[in-house]
Length: 92
Image (cartoon, rainbow, N blue to C red; front, top):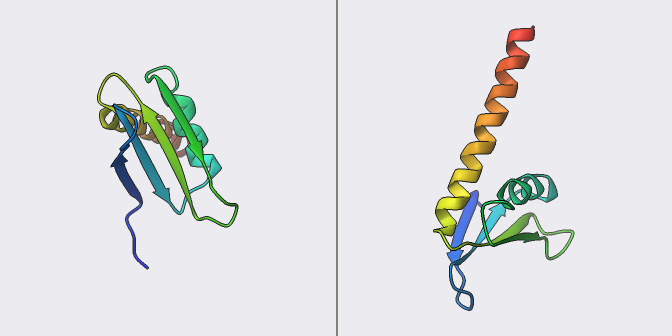
């Protein structure tokens, strides 16, 4: 089954809250994202419902647009990883 890597939905019960489902990901990606977002949002947490699930759900609540906050976070992580890759390539 070919599904999108990321699925974002608005929470029906909580204002200014989104749920992000990252398919084919687990604790590693979710931990990096939630740790990076902690300072810029009101609430962020992730859960893996069952150990055999092949996805993680991240909930983000923010006074500012939570989708925009998630986007900024992911771009920041990509910049950091790109910098590490560049430094490794220059070291060889």
